[in-house]
Image 1 (cartoon, rainbow, N blue to C red):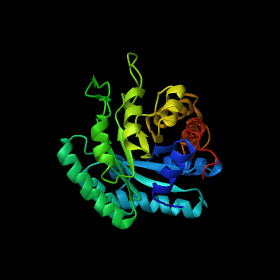
Image 2 (image 1 turned 135 degrees about the horizontal axis):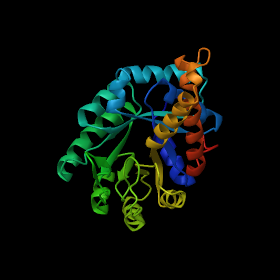
Image 3 (image 1 turned 90 degrees about the horizontal axis):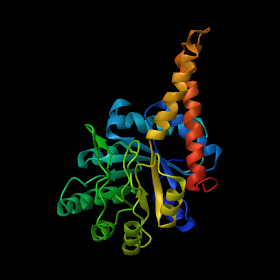
Length: 287
């Protein structure tokens, strides 16, 4: 069933586990993630970046597809459609289209403007029962060949944003998007502990969940992380499986060129990756 992330996050903080927010890129992705959540009785969030939303034909198309699948596939676990790293305009459009949760990423603004814009998004969202994620401290990653180590969030700024009434808070603690470089120094748990101390029961969000060692993920969850974003890992496993299918010449056998057959190994690979993540995050049987 399509819900906001409010109850999901509260339950995760209380139960000391994390809900996976898996980015969707097309129909295969969406179906694989929903079925895996249902099979493992796990709550789930479907992350949609603005670029992916555009690629799939717009936010309304995404919501229509998710709603249709929930009904047709008899998905009874809690599902939230969440805008990932939304701009101010993007967050407003996603809410209009029926998203049940949005992330407003105001980290590129100064703290005062971030606060003002976050307040406006919260006011619109609250009126419609939509949950809001905000970000403090940019999440690192590679852009034009420059690898960001991941900025550390200021715990006081985190408290300032948390106090505005956001549902969940993404704080940079050395995590980055994409593959982690060999010289990555790991997550900063001292900063995470300080943020937790200042924000209380606020569910914290870990972006860049691909490639973080399991022990670090478990420690982050113990310190209040209740939502972990995964995208790159699903993309890598999907691509590897489809590549193998083609390299093995399966697309040349019979009707192996049918896209349903061609993409099937990738679909199964996403399911396996998502299940593995749900096991690590501790969300299985928590629906």
